[in-house]
Length: 394
Image (cartoon, rainbow, N blue to C red; front, side, top):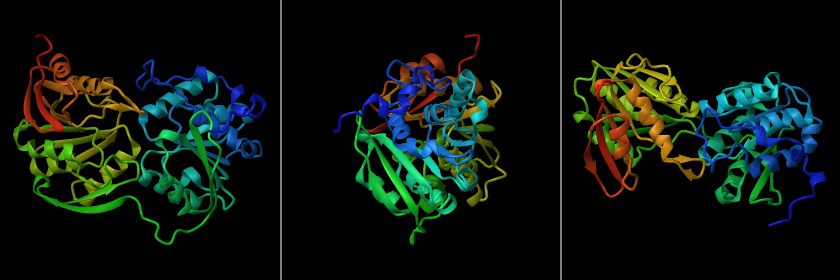
Protein backbone atom coordinates (compact mmCIF):
# COMPACT_ATOMS: atom_id res chain seq x y z
CA UNK A 1 0.00 0.00 0.00
CA UNK A 2 1.30 3.45 -0.82
CA UNK A 3 1.74 6.09 1.86
CA UNK A 4 -0.95 8.78 2.12
CA UNK A 5 -0.16 12.00 0.30
CA UNK A 6 0.73 15.08 2.26
CA UNK A 7 -2.27 17.15 3.40
CA UNK A 8 -1.46 19.86 0.83
CA UNK A 9 -2.05 17.27 -1.90
CA UNK A 10 -5.45 16.27 -0.50
CA UNK A 11 -8.04 18.94 -1.36
CA UNK A 12 -10.69 16.84 0.37
CA UNK A 13 -9.12 17.67 3.75
CA UNK A 14 -10.66 21.13 3.47
CA UNK A 15 -14.22 19.79 3.60
CA UNK A 16 -15.95 18.96 6.90
CA UNK A 17 -17.30 15.48 6.19
CA UNK A 18 -18.35 15.12 9.82
CA UNK A 19 -21.32 17.38 9.03
CA UNK A 20 -22.86 14.69 6.83
CA UNK A 21 -25.44 12.24 8.14
CA UNK A 22 -27.15 9.15 6.76
CA UNK A 23 -30.72 10.04 7.81
CA UNK A 24 -33.37 8.94 6.89
CA UNK A 25 -31.34 5.79 6.17
CA UNK A 26 -30.22 3.56 9.01
CA UNK A 27 -27.79 5.24 11.40
CA UNK A 28 -25.56 3.26 13.75
CA UNK A 29 -22.10 3.65 15.34
CA UNK A 30 -20.53 1.35 12.73
CA UNK A 31 -22.22 3.06 9.77
CA UNK A 32 -20.84 6.30 8.34
CA UNK A 33 -21.91 8.81 5.70
CA UNK A 34 -18.48 8.99 4.07
CA UNK A 35 -15.55 6.65 3.56
CA UNK A 36 -11.94 6.89 2.43
CA UNK A 37 -12.94 6.12 -1.16
CA UNK A 38 -15.02 9.33 -1.30
CA UNK A 39 -12.01 11.37 -0.22
CA UNK A 40 -9.67 9.62 -2.64
CA UNK A 41 -12.03 10.09 -5.59
CA UNK A 42 -12.17 13.82 -4.88
CA UNK A 43 -8.40 14.07 -4.57
CA UNK A 44 -7.69 12.07 -7.74
CA UNK A 45 -10.25 14.09 -9.69
CA UNK A 46 -9.15 17.48 -8.30
CA UNK A 47 -7.25 18.67 -11.42
CA UNK A 48 -10.28 17.92 -13.61
CA UNK A 49 -12.74 19.42 -11.12
CA UNK A 50 -10.75 22.67 -10.90
CA UNK A 51 -11.23 23.29 -14.63
CA UNK A 52 -14.79 21.99 -14.89
CA UNK A 53 -17.58 24.34 -15.90
CA UNK A 54 -21.17 24.38 -14.69
CA UNK A 55 -22.94 21.24 -15.89
CA UNK A 56 -19.72 19.36 -16.68
CA UNK A 57 -19.73 17.14 -13.58
CA UNK A 58 -21.80 14.03 -12.89
CA UNK A 59 -21.81 12.06 -9.64
CA UNK A 60 -23.08 8.46 -9.51
CA UNK A 61 -23.52 6.29 -6.43
CA UNK A 62 -23.05 9.16 -4.00
CA UNK A 63 -24.66 7.46 -1.01
CA UNK A 64 -25.19 10.47 1.26
CA UNK A 65 -23.75 13.43 -0.62
CA UNK A 66 -20.04 13.28 0.23
CA UNK A 67 -18.96 13.56 -3.40
CA UNK A 68 -21.61 15.99 -4.62
CA UNK A 69 -21.48 18.41 -1.71
CA UNK A 70 -17.70 18.34 -1.28
CA UNK A 71 -17.21 18.95 -5.02
CA UNK A 72 -19.59 21.90 -4.88
CA UNK A 73 -17.85 23.37 -1.83
CA UNK A 74 -14.21 22.73 -2.68
CA UNK A 75 -14.32 23.63 -6.36
CA UNK A 76 -17.21 26.09 -6.50
CA UNK A 77 -19.16 23.85 -8.86
CA UNK A 78 -22.80 24.26 -9.81
CA UNK A 79 -25.07 22.31 -12.11
CA UNK A 80 -23.81 18.98 -10.75
CA UNK A 81 -25.96 16.07 -11.91
CA UNK A 82 -26.29 13.38 -9.24
CA UNK A 83 -27.73 9.88 -9.29
CA UNK A 84 -28.28 7.75 -6.22
CA UNK A 85 -30.15 4.48 -6.60
CA UNK A 86 -31.73 4.32 -3.14
CA UNK A 87 -34.59 6.69 -2.36
CA UNK A 88 -33.25 7.00 1.19
CA UNK A 89 -29.92 8.11 -0.29
CA UNK A 90 -31.64 10.78 -2.36
CA UNK A 91 -33.39 12.07 0.74
CA UNK A 92 -30.14 12.04 2.73
CA UNK A 93 -28.33 14.06 0.06
CA UNK A 94 -31.17 16.59 0.03
CA UNK A 95 -31.15 16.90 3.83
CA UNK A 96 -27.37 17.28 3.99
CA UNK A 97 -27.42 19.84 1.18
CA UNK A 98 -30.09 21.86 2.96
CA UNK A 99 -28.07 21.84 6.19
CA UNK A 100 -24.98 23.10 4.31
CA UNK A 101 -26.81 25.64 2.16
CA UNK A 102 -25.93 23.76 -1.05
CA UNK A 103 -29.39 22.85 -2.34
CA UNK A 104 -28.95 24.86 -5.55
CA UNK A 105 -25.60 23.31 -6.48
CA UNK A 106 -26.95 20.03 -7.88
CA UNK A 107 -29.96 18.23 -9.32
CA UNK A 108 -31.00 14.61 -8.83
CA UNK A 109 -31.38 12.49 -11.97
CA UNK A 110 -32.46 9.01 -12.95
CA UNK A 111 -29.84 6.71 -14.45
CA UNK A 112 -30.51 7.68 -18.06
CA UNK A 113 -29.12 9.74 -20.92
CA UNK A 114 -30.05 13.06 -19.30
CA UNK A 115 -27.78 12.25 -16.36
CA UNK A 116 -24.58 12.01 -18.42
CA UNK A 117 -25.23 13.88 -21.69
CA UNK A 118 -22.18 16.01 -22.51
CA UNK A 119 -20.50 15.35 -19.16
CA UNK A 120 -16.72 15.79 -18.96
CA UNK A 121 -16.09 14.50 -15.40
CA UNK A 122 -17.83 11.56 -13.74
CA UNK A 123 -17.26 10.74 -10.07
CA UNK A 124 -18.37 7.20 -9.31
CA UNK A 125 -18.55 5.10 -6.18
CA UNK A 126 -17.98 1.65 -7.66
CA UNK A 127 -21.11 -0.51 -7.36
CA UNK A 128 -20.77 -4.08 -6.06
CA UNK A 129 -22.60 -5.46 -9.08
CA UNK A 130 -20.62 -5.87 -12.30
CA UNK A 131 -23.86 -5.53 -14.26
CA UNK A 132 -24.47 -2.18 -12.57
CA UNK A 133 -20.98 -1.01 -13.48
CA UNK A 134 -21.44 -2.23 -17.06
CA UNK A 135 -24.72 -0.33 -17.43
CA UNK A 136 -23.17 2.87 -16.04
CA UNK A 137 -20.00 2.62 -18.14
CA UNK A 138 -22.00 1.95 -21.29
CA UNK A 139 -24.28 4.92 -20.62
CA UNK A 140 -21.34 7.27 -20.05
CA UNK A 141 -19.40 6.02 -23.08
CA UNK A 142 -22.40 6.52 -25.37
CA UNK A 143 -23.70 9.87 -24.17
CA UNK A 144 -21.01 11.85 -22.33
CA UNK A 145 -18.50 14.20 -23.98
CA UNK A 146 -15.81 12.38 -26.00
CA UNK A 147 -13.20 13.76 -23.57
CA UNK A 148 -15.02 12.50 -20.47
CA UNK A 149 -12.99 11.01 -17.64
CA UNK A 150 -14.47 8.64 -15.03
CA UNK A 151 -12.94 8.54 -11.54
CA UNK A 152 -14.34 5.33 -10.05
CA UNK A 153 -13.36 4.57 -6.47
CA UNK A 154 -14.00 1.87 -3.93
CA UNK A 155 -12.67 0.04 -0.91
CA UNK A 156 -9.98 -2.50 -1.79
CA UNK A 157 -11.85 -5.35 -0.11
CA UNK A 158 -14.73 -4.89 -2.54
CA UNK A 159 -12.68 -4.31 -5.70
CA UNK A 160 -11.74 -6.92 -8.31
CA UNK A 161 -9.74 -6.97 -11.52
CA UNK A 162 -12.99 -7.71 -13.35
CA UNK A 163 -14.10 -4.14 -12.65
CA UNK A 164 -11.13 -2.93 -14.69
CA UNK A 165 -12.19 -5.28 -17.48
CA UNK A 166 -15.76 -3.99 -17.45
CA UNK A 167 -14.54 -0.41 -17.78
CA UNK A 168 -12.13 -1.48 -20.52
CA UNK A 169 -15.09 -2.81 -22.51
CA UNK A 170 -16.24 0.79 -22.91
CA UNK A 171 -13.08 2.91 -22.56
CA UNK A 172 -9.74 2.56 -24.35
CA UNK A 173 -7.70 3.87 -21.41
CA UNK A 174 -8.19 2.40 -17.93
CA UNK A 175 -5.65 2.52 -15.14
CA UNK A 176 -5.58 2.00 -11.39
CA UNK A 177 -4.15 4.66 -9.12
CA UNK A 178 -2.17 4.10 -5.95
CA UNK A 179 -4.08 2.84 -2.95
CA UNK A 180 -4.65 4.98 0.12
CA UNK A 181 -6.41 4.09 3.34
CA UNK A 182 -7.50 0.74 1.85
CA UNK A 183 -9.13 2.48 -1.12
CA UNK A 184 -8.29 2.87 -4.79
CA UNK A 185 -9.51 4.84 -7.81
CA UNK A 186 -9.82 3.47 -11.34
CA UNK A 187 -9.61 6.15 -14.04
CA UNK A 188 -11.25 5.57 -17.44
CA UNK A 189 -11.11 7.79 -20.53
CA UNK A 190 -11.40 7.71 -24.34
CA UNK A 191 -14.84 6.10 -24.68
CA UNK A 192 -15.43 3.54 -27.39
CA UNK A 193 -18.45 1.75 -28.75
CA UNK A 194 -18.24 -1.77 -27.36
CA UNK A 195 -18.83 -4.37 -30.04
CA UNK A 196 -20.82 -6.65 -27.74
CA UNK A 197 -22.45 -4.04 -25.50
CA UNK A 198 -25.48 -5.45 -23.70
CA UNK A 199 -28.82 -3.68 -23.79
CA UNK A 200 -30.47 -2.85 -20.47
CA UNK A 201 -32.67 -3.98 -18.98
CA UNK A 202 -31.33 -7.50 -19.43
CA UNK A 203 -33.98 -10.04 -20.41
CA UNK A 204 -34.39 -13.72 -19.56
CA UNK A 205 -37.32 -16.08 -20.02
CA UNK A 206 -37.68 -18.36 -16.99
CA UNK A 207 -39.76 -21.51 -16.99
CA UNK A 208 -40.36 -22.94 -13.53
CA UNK A 209 -43.42 -24.46 -11.85
CA UNK A 210 -43.27 -21.94 -8.97
CA UNK A 211 -43.63 -19.14 -11.52
CA UNK A 212 -46.81 -20.60 -12.92
CA UNK A 213 -44.97 -21.38 -16.14
CA UNK A 214 -43.14 -19.07 -18.52
CA UNK A 215 -42.14 -15.69 -17.03
CA UNK A 216 -40.06 -12.99 -18.72
CA UNK A 217 -37.77 -11.25 -16.21
CA UNK A 218 -36.19 -7.85 -16.92
CA UNK A 219 -33.29 -6.49 -14.87
CA UNK A 220 -31.31 -3.27 -14.83
CA UNK A 221 -27.72 -3.58 -13.66
CA UNK A 222 -28.27 -2.64 -10.04
CA UNK A 223 -31.23 -4.95 -9.41
CA UNK A 224 -30.76 -7.76 -6.89
CA UNK A 225 -30.22 -11.22 -8.44
CA UNK A 226 -30.38 -9.78 -11.96
CA UNK A 227 -32.65 -11.97 -14.13
CA UNK A 228 -32.21 -15.04 -11.91
CA UNK A 229 -34.74 -16.58 -9.55
CA UNK A 230 -32.80 -16.56 -6.27
CA UNK A 231 -33.32 -19.52 -3.95
CA UNK A 232 -34.90 -17.52 -1.13
CA UNK A 233 -37.53 -16.05 -3.44
CA UNK A 234 -38.12 -19.46 -4.94
CA UNK A 235 -38.79 -20.93 -1.50
CA UNK A 236 -41.25 -18.14 -0.69
CA UNK A 237 -43.06 -18.69 -3.99
CA UNK A 238 -43.36 -22.43 -3.29
CA UNK A 239 -45.63 -21.54 -0.38
CA UNK A 240 -47.45 -18.60 -1.94
CA UNK A 241 -50.66 -20.64 -2.55
CA UNK A 242 -50.98 -21.05 1.25
CA UNK A 243 -50.57 -17.34 2.01
CA UNK A 244 -53.87 -15.59 2.78
CA UNK A 245 -55.73 -17.21 -0.16
CA UNK A 246 -58.58 -14.66 -0.05
CA UNK A 247 -56.32 -11.58 0.09
CA UNK A 248 -57.74 -8.70 -1.94
CA UNK A 249 -54.66 -6.47 -1.64
CA UNK A 250 -51.12 -7.85 -1.82
CA UNK A 251 -47.83 -5.98 -1.42
CA UNK A 252 -44.45 -7.26 -2.63
CA UNK A 253 -42.18 -5.31 -0.27
CA UNK A 254 -38.63 -4.94 -1.59
CA UNK A 255 -39.83 -6.17 -4.96
CA UNK A 256 -36.50 -6.35 -6.79
CA UNK A 257 -37.18 -7.33 -10.40
CA UNK A 258 -40.85 -7.92 -9.65
CA UNK A 259 -40.93 -11.72 -9.84
CA UNK A 260 -43.02 -12.19 -6.69
CA UNK A 261 -45.46 -9.44 -7.67
CA UNK A 262 -45.84 -10.89 -11.16
CA UNK A 263 -46.50 -14.40 -9.86
CA UNK A 264 -48.95 -13.09 -7.25
CA UNK A 265 -50.86 -11.17 -9.92
CA UNK A 266 -50.83 -14.15 -12.27
CA UNK A 267 -52.08 -16.64 -9.66
CA UNK A 268 -54.48 -14.29 -7.84
CA UNK A 269 -56.42 -12.64 -10.68
CA UNK A 270 -58.91 -10.97 -8.34
CA UNK A 271 -56.26 -9.33 -6.12
CA UNK A 272 -54.75 -5.86 -6.44
CA UNK A 273 -50.94 -6.14 -6.31
CA UNK A 274 -48.44 -3.45 -5.35
CA UNK A 275 -44.69 -3.88 -5.93
CA UNK A 276 -42.59 -1.53 -3.82
CA UNK A 277 -38.85 -0.89 -3.55
CA UNK A 278 -36.60 2.03 -2.59
CA UNK A 279 -34.13 1.17 -5.39
CA UNK A 280 -34.59 2.93 -8.72
CA UNK A 281 -32.93 0.02 -10.53
CA UNK A 282 -35.38 -2.38 -8.89
CA UNK A 283 -38.43 -0.28 -9.68
CA UNK A 284 -37.44 0.19 -13.32
CA UNK A 285 -36.77 -3.55 -13.55
CA UNK A 286 -40.07 -4.50 -11.93
CA UNK A 287 -42.03 -2.20 -14.24
CA UNK A 288 -40.32 -3.77 -17.24
CA UNK A 289 -40.99 -7.29 -15.93
CA UNK A 290 -44.64 -6.52 -15.28
CA UNK A 291 -45.04 -4.99 -18.74
CA UNK A 292 -43.25 -7.88 -20.46
CA UNK A 293 -45.77 -10.30 -18.93
CA UNK A 294 -48.85 -8.19 -19.77
CA UNK A 295 -49.56 -7.49 -16.12
CA UNK A 296 -49.35 -3.69 -16.13
CA UNK A 297 -53.05 -3.32 -15.38
CA UNK A 298 -52.78 -5.73 -12.46
CA UNK A 299 -49.60 -4.55 -10.71
CA UNK A 300 -48.78 -1.04 -9.49
CA UNK A 301 -45.02 -0.51 -9.12
CA UNK A 302 -43.90 2.27 -6.77
CA UNK A 303 -40.57 3.62 -5.58
CA UNK A 304 -41.13 4.06 -1.88
CA UNK A 305 -39.35 3.96 1.45
CA UNK A 306 -40.92 1.56 3.95
CA UNK A 307 -44.36 1.72 2.27
CA UNK A 308 -44.80 5.36 3.28
CA UNK A 309 -47.29 6.01 0.46
CA UNK A 310 -49.63 3.16 1.47
CA UNK A 311 -52.39 3.93 3.94
CA UNK A 312 -52.24 2.15 7.29
CA UNK A 313 -54.48 -0.88 7.78
CA UNK A 314 -55.38 -1.38 4.10
CA UNK A 315 -53.39 -4.48 3.04
CA UNK A 316 -54.29 -8.16 3.42
CA UNK A 317 -50.95 -9.78 2.57
CA UNK A 318 -47.33 -8.59 2.50
CA UNK A 319 -44.63 -10.76 0.92
CA UNK A 320 -41.03 -10.03 1.94
CA UNK A 321 -37.50 -11.28 1.33
CA UNK A 322 -35.61 -8.71 3.45
CA UNK A 323 -31.98 -7.68 3.05
CA UNK A 324 -29.79 -7.81 6.13
CA UNK A 325 -26.71 -5.82 5.09
CA UNK A 326 -26.14 -2.07 5.19
CA UNK A 327 -23.00 -1.40 3.19
CA UNK A 328 -20.76 -4.30 4.31
CA UNK A 329 -22.14 -4.55 7.85
CA UNK A 330 -24.78 -6.99 9.04
CA UNK A 331 -27.66 -4.88 10.33
CA UNK A 332 -30.76 -6.73 11.59
CA UNK A 333 -32.38 -3.31 12.07
CA UNK A 334 -32.97 -3.14 8.31
CA UNK A 335 -35.32 -6.11 8.47
CA UNK A 336 -36.96 -4.75 11.63
CA UNK A 337 -37.80 -1.50 9.85
CA UNK A 338 -39.44 -3.47 7.04
CA UNK A 339 -41.39 -5.60 9.53
CA UNK A 340 -42.64 -2.39 11.14
CA UNK A 341 -43.66 -1.03 7.74
CA UNK A 342 -45.57 -4.22 6.99
CA UNK A 343 -47.29 -4.13 10.38
CA UNK A 344 -48.41 -0.55 9.78
CA UNK A 345 -50.10 -1.25 6.43
CA UNK A 346 -51.62 -4.64 7.30
CA UNK A 347 -55.23 -4.92 8.39
CA UNK A 348 -55.82 -6.65 11.72
CA UNK A 349 -55.67 -10.33 10.81
CA UNK A 350 -53.64 -9.58 7.69
CA UNK A 351 -50.53 -11.67 7.09
CA UNK A 352 -46.82 -11.03 6.53
CA UNK A 353 -45.02 -13.92 4.83
CA UNK A 354 -41.26 -13.63 5.11
CA UNK A 355 -38.28 -15.63 3.89
CA UNK A 356 -34.89 -15.09 5.51
CA UNK A 357 -31.55 -16.76 6.14
CA UNK A 358 -31.80 -19.59 8.66
CA UNK A 359 -29.08 -18.19 10.92
CA UNK A 360 -30.99 -14.95 11.50
CA UNK A 361 -33.26 -14.77 14.54
CA UNK A 362 -36.14 -12.77 13.11
CA UNK A 363 -39.02 -14.75 14.57
CA UNK A 364 -39.04 -13.08 18.03
CA UNK A 365 -38.92 -9.68 16.33
CA UNK A 366 -41.80 -10.64 14.05
CA UNK A 367 -43.79 -11.80 17.08
CA UNK A 368 -43.19 -8.48 18.80
CA UNK A 369 -43.64 -6.13 15.84
CA UNK A 370 -46.36 -7.87 13.81
CA UNK A 371 -48.04 -10.61 15.82
CA UNK A 372 -48.25 -14.39 16.23
CA UNK A 373 -45.68 -16.01 13.94
CA UNK A 374 -45.33 -19.61 12.80
CA UNK A 375 -42.66 -21.39 10.80
CA UNK A 376 -44.04 -22.51 7.46
CA UNK A 377 -40.93 -24.16 6.05
CA UNK A 378 -37.24 -24.54 6.75
CA UNK A 379 -34.23 -25.56 4.67
CA UNK A 380 -30.52 -25.54 5.54
CA UNK A 381 -30.31 -21.96 4.22
CA UNK A 382 -33.74 -20.36 4.58
CA UNK A 383 -36.82 -20.11 6.77
CA UNK A 384 -40.31 -19.08 5.67
CA UNK A 385 -42.58 -17.63 8.35
CA UNK A 386 -46.16 -16.38 8.44
CA UNK A 387 -47.08 -13.60 10.89
CA UNK A 388 -50.65 -12.50 11.62
CA UNK A 389 -51.20 -8.83 12.36
CA UNK A 390 -52.63 -8.50 15.82
CA UNK A 391 -55.38 -6.01 16.52
CA UNK A 392 -53.98 -2.66 17.61
CA UNK A 393 -55.97 -2.92 20.84
CA UNK A 394 -54.50 -6.31 21.85
